[in-house]
Image 1 (cartoon, rainbow, N blue to C red):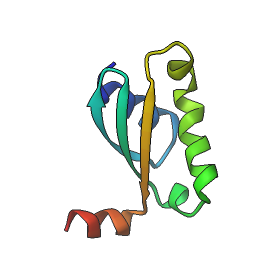
Image 2 (cartoon, rainbow, N blue to C red):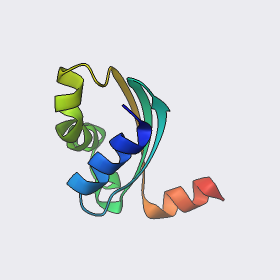
Image 3 (cartoon, rainbow, N blue to C red):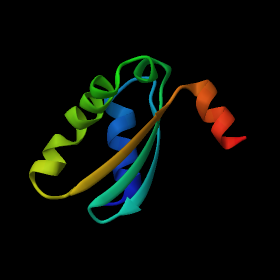
Length: 80
């Protein structure tokens, strides 16, 4: 599994989301940029992403996922 595959899956499944996916194989770090998701609580944010990735987790294609969530404004500030 490539990071670009994970990025594409999430961006196609959730409207208005931009993802920076880092990693390879079965371990990934996701930087998720979405004003809508950033407004949700931490559990709801993760549930939205896991809903997309669960089939890949279940079949072993993905083993570990770390997520950070940003609003558009936070992401711009982070990237300076």
